[in-house]
Image 1 (cartoon, rainbow, N blue to C red):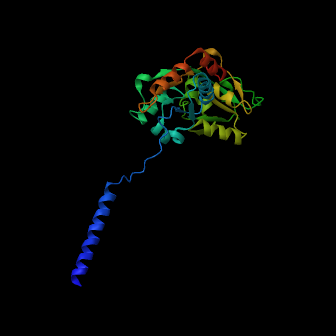
Image 2: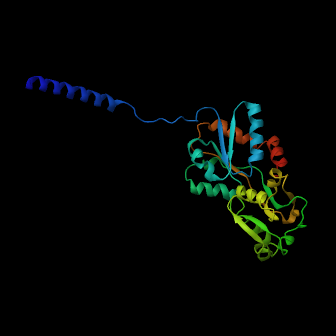
Length: 263
């Protein structure tokens, strides 16, 4: 009886050992489905340049057959995805992309950095301009309520404009609320009719024609900021991504950007 039990125990041990060996040699890692190597160029950046970037991407795809997917908005909404599959990153201003590079060291291929087109700052007001705002000076009038975007390519924008005319104090006292992104400013603009003005890029008017009028500043007072773009260091589509960047620098793409408020 003891001999039978001993033999049985030995077989159980051998069976268990074999099972453990097989299990140990199995690949238990969960392999994520990668969106890379599928021939799609993935572009990420802020919401400001989305209009012309998307339209230019559609033209590029029509001409080349290479699909381009543009994802835009506050960086926090797309950064996790971009770290996995971004081919191209663009900025809403030069400092914005440089800041991205500092926050994400090694992600941008610095040798590929290039500048697209500049865009001017202006004043967005309510349809019909009920507060009769026609200049920076008008923003200092009593009762004018201003929304300020303290970030998203607009950091210090109004101050740079006002400082040249000695209007920093007058405009500062009329800033009713400050937010971090244009998306927040748009939401407030649409939900709070008491806000009268927003010093931002003229280009935003072309995205908000139904709820804004544009007050253009005289050329001598205008302030321009750039639209930088670069390939990432993780792209698997370097040739195609560079092809798209080169397309963005053509006259046909320039005309698209001009239609959306760029110079």
